[in-house]
Image (cartoon, rainbow, N blue to C red; front, side, top):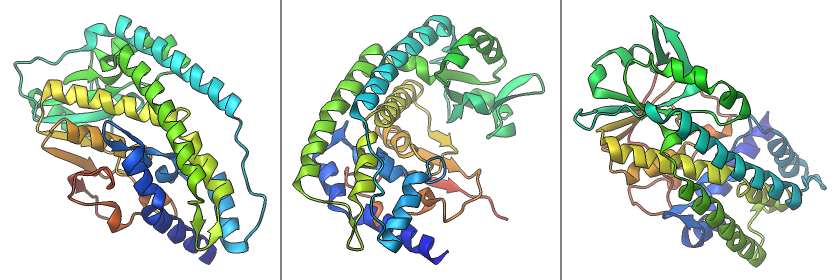
Length: 322
């Protein structure tokens, strides 16, 4: 157990202090968002993808060699092209079939917008609500709105007509985030992110940035960083753009979510801030474990200064007490 504690602390501290953080802040940005904060490295996801973290633990504690996970650029490129085409098709289908799902009345003041995920919805007393927010969906409904993120896969698209029926029972006004995305957004994000990948290659060729406690972890972490540009970064930015556009349209006082600092949460906080919403509020809904390292931060990651060097953050964190 001591080895895992050492690995966790060493890795989290390296993320905060590595010169890569400054390089990205200065040179690898989209909409003034440093892509450092939305890379696979900063996601720190050792829950859904534990292999890299297991290898890192071996490397830091036993100096074991040959832990590199090879990266196939051809396969990654084909997957990226597939993602790009799928995104365009999904966007088209959702706009075509769910185009009447835009229900926000410009005459109604919305105090609270809830960021919701479609797979969290349940039927409750004849209404279709997000279970994470529970009965809040029934109180002062005129002042609330859902921002609904739909999954984009073949299984969902096959059931999109059924989805349309279910959405008729949502008790509050709502916007489907996927339908807010423009085709031009998709093209711009995918092509700009690839150009930023080439800038990243140039940066990585300048030095070995992956020394942790004087141990060379490049073979593990460099490919994980590069893989961020083959889908994860593009998807996050597009979600952020959709959120910002929706908030600018609705102009609420608060945006409420339950993402904490789960992987991919930071991009939403960044674009919510750009919309000039007053409060970004998080409601705690999970049990925290320090070995899930995306719960681990350093104070120096955050600042009241609004620069790309510092992490996007929320304003209010509502916690449960046990």
